[in-house]
Amino acid sequence: MQSLYSNDAPASANDERFDGLLRLARRHFDVMAALLLTGGEGRRRVRACAGLSAVQLARVGLLGNWACADGLYLVADAQRDASLRDHDLVVAAPHLRFLAACPMRAPGGDVLGMLYLFDDRPRELDAAQQQALLEFAGLALELLGRDEADAQQRQEIAALRDSERRMALAIAGSGTGIWDRNVATGEIHYSSGWKALLGYADHEVGNRIEESYTRVHPADLDYVKATIAAHLEQRTAAYEVEHRLRCRDGRYKWVCSRGKVVERDGAGKPLRMIGTTTDITAMRTLAERLQQSAALMTDLTNEIPGMVFQYRRQPDGESAFSYVSAGAEVICGLSAEQLLRDAQALPALVHPDDRAAYLASFEASARQLTPWRLEFRLQLPGQALAWRQGEACPRRLEDGSVLWHGFITDVTERKQIEAELQAFATTDFLTQLANRRHFMQLLDAELARLQRSPGQCATILMFDLDHFKAINDRWGHSIGDQALRHFAAILCAQLRKTDAAGRMGGEEFAAVLSDADLHQARHFAQRIQGELAKTPILHGGEQIFLAVSVGISALRAADASAEAALSRSDIALYCAKRGGRNRIECH
Image (cartoon, rainbow, N blue to C red; front, side, top):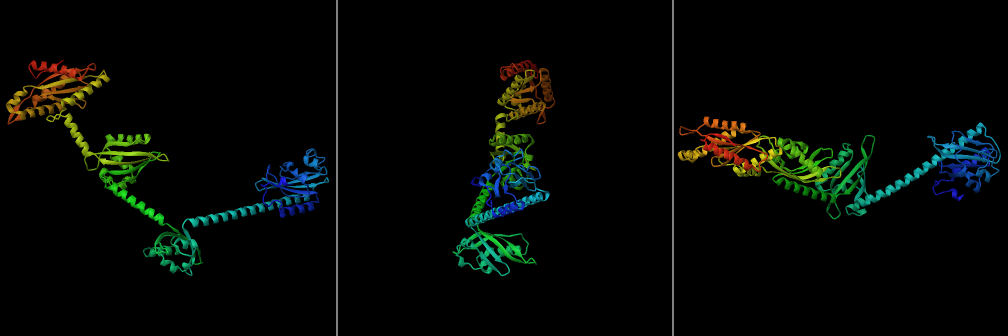
């Protein structure tokens, strides 16, 4: 018998309700034994039995699930039944002749148990007896349901007690006290934890609401009363307020009081209110320190002459500024609030020629997690073109987004100085053409282009103003300088965007014509000479006509250097000068 009562059996196994039911069934049907098994297939447990020996009971588990159909399973004579004649139970109890099995089915159809009847006489059950057996099985199923409900209730009660214990421990360790107020009488009762929160013993705190208000900081009292009144009058769903309470030692402690009316009369008048008070002094202190730190950081970033920012880009490409300093107004002409609302307002101001590089630089920084650094131009409404330099460090967050912390500053003045220095280093001051050094760099670049594309062509022209020394000697160097500027202006007016010109020294100039052969170069030189003939220099009512000699040569991909091609043009120029000046010669 002991092996049949496993530790998994319900606590109510073999209780009097099931035993009484089986004794009643045994007498009603006048059978040798009755048995009640519960549980599904493979997990059968003896719930109650009447009339079976321990040996016979030990073999009950071998009975199988005969009641697989909706009806009863009836065996009039087990000794004559082919399916039971050799069964262990029948062999162990040869006097067992009659067997009836009735399933206990849940509303869903699952078999929750079996009710068996055994007898030592062959017999039959008429329709009334079969109905009675079904009703006994129904009673057993109902008892089983009640038993499970009782067990469930016991578990819920135990869980509730555990929850109450945990809640009590949590409240005790959280710096929270509980209060219960009778609104009608003005009485208020505090838990021991509430009193200990402020350093009071149980007998040192009264139970009148008027006394409770004396502990509220005077600066907070009106606010506390107004908040309570709003809830009592049902203008708010609950009462919650942060305020200061005086401790026993006279110090004030920051608390958060929460409460709610739990009982009202028929007219809606509040009768009872329950709530909690939690010590938040440490949290308030930390919040104040954080606020001070945040204010300090904001002040510092706002004073920096530039725009400090925090920028976040989501995995789906959406982006937004999460912080922008006040310097945004100077840097991009937009307020911090505007950029926080619309991060795309900044790229919209980037110069069209720089916008693609601006967007691509953030793409690369996000993809490779490398620092972002870029110089770009902004077109600010009503202002000249401005240069900005941005730098930021990226960091990937757990959700896959990228966060940059960075800085954008105004570098317009530096870029202007750089441009002036570049111009000073590459430009002839008098004529504003490229100086010799810079022109040679341009010539080298054109030669490199031809060497990459041998099918292309280019020509070099050398110009020398005729009788320039005589102009200086007769009219002075100021007129000579004017003559040089005059020729440079005419030369520049004839150049295309792909061409370049420079002053090589004194009255010598050079030009390189991209994608132009010797014939086209000669026409170019003729136009220069024609313009000079039509536009003399005026000085004191006198016209000073200028003339120029020109030497032309082709720039070839096979040239070892640009100097070699320039030398050929120089030779052609020498021939033009020797041939009588104001001439054009090709090498």
